[in-house]
Structure formats: C-alpha cells, structure tokens
Image (cartoon, rainbow, N blue to C red; front, side, top):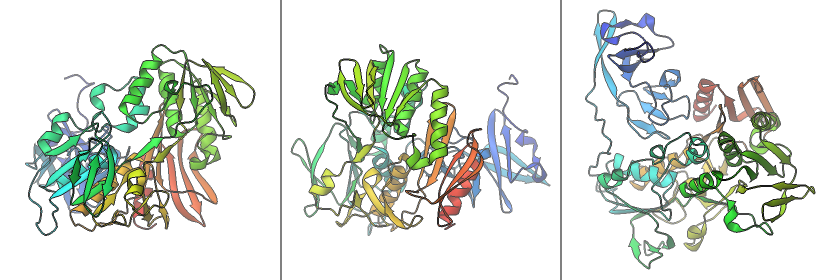
Length: 510
C-alpha cells in the first residue's frame, strides 16, 4: 500500500491510550478501514469516520451526548448504532467493537449492528398505526417521510405521489456540482430505484393530484382515480417564479427546480457562449458559478444593490459579489430586464446584453393550490402546529409549504431549505404514527460558491446588529445576526465547528 492510500492514524488493533485522544476523539484504522474513536463519559465508542451524505469528516464534527454531528451539513449519527438520526444523511454507518486491554483501547472487528441498504419493515403498534398513508410530493420532505415510516417499523401501505418524472433526487446538487459537470448521474438519486420496491413504498411518478377530500379521506388523481388515506402528508414544495418578459419565448427562459431543468440548462450550455441570469438569489449565483466552471460568459441582472443582502447583510453580500467577480461574473445590479428580442435583452438602465441563454433565479412560491382547495388554514403557507398537523384531522404538511410556530425565533415561519424539509418530513412521519413529537429543529442551509461554502443556522428576517468574528474577506468568519442582543442566526465560512456549536446553543435555548 502506498503512502497516499495509507489509512490515517494508528493501528487500532495494536491499541491506543486515552492520552492519545484529542478533544475526546482519535482517528485510526483497522487494516485498510479508517475508524473514529470517540470518548463518551467512561466509554469509548467507534464508528466509520465519514458522513454518509457527502463524506464529511466526522473527526472534525461535534459530539453531543452519544451522537456525532457532521461539520459540513449537520447530519447527525448515533455513535452506538451508526444510524443516521437526522438528515441530510440517510445511510447508516458501521460501528466497531471496542475492547480494553489494560490501559489501552483495542478495535478489531465491526459490531453486529444491522447495516443494510433497505430499511427494516416491522409491525407498528396497532393502537397508533394507520392502515394507509399517502404522501403527496416527491421532494425532500416526501422522501424523508416515506423513508422514516419504514425505518420506524411501519408496515402499512405507503403511497408516494409525485408529478415529477424522476424519482427523488439530491436537489441541492442540481445547481452545484452536477450543473458544473463535476458530479456524475449516479450521485443524483437519493436512493436507487430498487429501494422503493424493497421497502414497500409505492412510488408513482408523473402522477399529479388534483384535489383532496379531507372528510372523505381521499385524494383524486388527474386520471380520475380516487385514492383513500388514513393519514395524509402534503409535501408539494415550491415552484420557480416565472417572469413574463415581453418578447421572450417561454422555452428560452430556463428555471431550475427539477433534474429535467438542470439537464435542460446543461444541454443549452453546450452550444452557448454567454448566459444571462436574472436574479442574484442563492440559486441564481450557484448557477452562475456552475456555468463559469463550464467556461461560459456569465452576466447577472438583479434589482438589488448587492446580492443576498436581505439574508446575509451588506458585508457578506459585498463579499459574495466580489467572489463571483473574481471568477469573471459580470453584475448589472439595480437593474431589470424590460424586454427581449431574439438574443438581445434590453435593460431598464438603457443598456442591452447579447445572450445565448437565459436562466431565471428570482425565487420560488409555495404550491398551495391543493391545500387551499381542501379548505386547510392558510397563512402565507399551510398553517401547521408544532406537530406539523394542519387544521384538518390526520392531514400533515411539511417542507416549503409549511408555516410552523418556531420556538427559536418566537414567530410563525416558513423556510424554503432542503434540510428543513427533510427534517420536517421525518418528524411528520413519526407523528403520523402517533408519536406526538414537536418539530423544534433549528433551520439550516448551505450554499456553495466555487470553493467557498457558506453555512447558515437559525432564522433572521430582520436584525438590529451584525457581529463578525474573524474576517469575511479572508474566508474565515462567524457572523452573528442579533435582535435586541439575542442571536437569531449565524452564517459561517470555514468555521464548521462553531456553526455546529451555535446550532446546539439555539436548540438548547441559547
């Protein structure tokens, strides 16, 4: 074995001492397998050292009781079983048996904890188990709910209805590595096709739902079929805002939400030299970065004076702009596109931009039509309680459409983030089984711009103070968004552990 491929740390079969640990952790190996040792009180537990989501290094993560959190995207694993107990990871990690040999800890073998690709399917308690659960939506919340139902041992019927043509995919990657040509197709599905069959999940693609009957407990499909339910989860997500630009052919205005959308942009990019992105949103600028990786000339037109200021503040907004300008992106801020003629976009300022393709990144709107038709309470989203139940019995909502009472901000909020949707799907699944679990996760999202990741925890729609620890410009910072002295949210660049610690403090009421 070469030095390049040699696993990290000491040979654990020879034993290590607690004095070798650093901050309660030690990375070593058993033969060719790397293993992370973690001290939990008087115990030492051992687990695979890389997150099953994007392979993040758990050695740099945060230990909380007998769990460990990934520093990259805040997934959480049980150190005892390896189970991914909180998204965005779903795959279980192997755990290893530790032994004491005098004053040394020795690891030789994996434990016998089940480590299978398919979830366990067992009978749930009869007094809480509904016979039929229907999930409307094939995105983050819908998938996470279906997967969690089976992981919790629910043995009843699970039907997942999606109007998308593709099975659930890793949507954040659609505007990042996949769009840039740096992630292969087989990275994109959240689970392979046979997962749904083996788990007993009836996934129906290309199946729009046209109405919900709360009293009759059924949903009607576009083909006229009525599908009964005992519990229903609405996870219809959001759809991109589509601008009406005079003279623009609708087929030339790309949006990005689905795998098909990303593929269409990739196809258009193969013959394009210059792209116009309308909107300086997170999605818009991630698309800008991805298309710069494909060597396209990129222009961004947006009405604000700096990108992302409403979410990240002025200094972070200026940093993001400068970062993209370093990579060749041309900004046209405080401006809008007023008309298009063939390949020419006319700007309100009087200028024009010649472009081969146009991508809209001006935000999304929640898909509320089914909830409205069903007579559910609406409050700029589907109103749900702390258990994610709607105003109708046995109907739950999760993801981009749900507005819930958030204990951290003290207000009802709706958040359009991937990890939030997944975690709500997991909580809704358990509550459809009668668990009565409050949804109290701290909102989290990440955004990638070239080699710079921005992590954000909490929720701050407004603030009266921003404090910066470190240097934004040097890409090493923790940014606090405060209101009346209280931290509502944190943004960070390469401060992964501080981001995890901030999330934990918010969970504990800090």
